[in-house]
Length: 88
Image 1 (cartoon, one colour):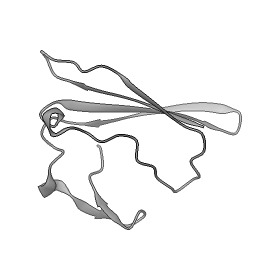
Image 2 (cartoon, rainbow, N blue to C red):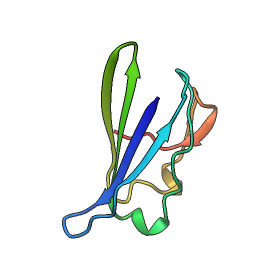
Image 3 (cartoon, rainbow, N blue to C red):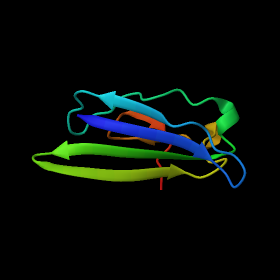
Image 4 (cartoon, one colour):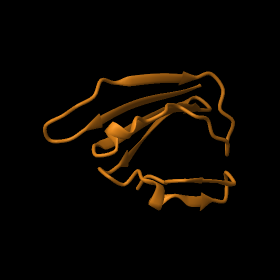
């Protein structure tokens, strides 16, 4: 099971939290979690991913800085064989 919590934020704005549960997500795979409205691109967008591996619970946070989600930033992601933007 994987749980993704996302939120957009800046110094003066904050969106509501979105929570998404993925019952099954195999290793080296991907799933669409949400459609991000273009109005949120000027915000920092944080995705906290929590998952079990064996009996251990792990969490990783991915942040897309403000204005980095844009068509010009799309790159081929070989593992997925799709274009996308990787968080730093």
